[in-house]
Image (cartoon, rainbow, N blue to C red; front, side, top):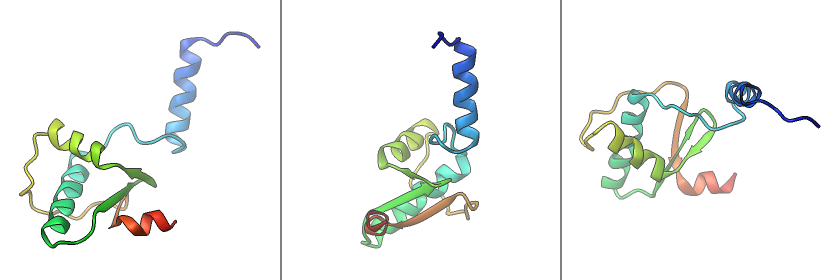
Length: 97
């Protein structure tokens, strides 16, 4: 088996990302705002931890915190409806699947 070039690896990774075999690399700011606001809202209501699915991939809280810091977002942002790419549920429902 021969050595592969860097371009071949980059093309294959891009192909996997398009086929959603790899987690999303970029998340839209509006969708990040929704996840942050929804998490804060559920915490203030005393509900269980919330996990998010973004395009079918679980979004860990560390990633959401990273997005919050990256975009300098405040927890008091108004909730805007997300696209079809985000699902928010109690964390125990995700663990059952």
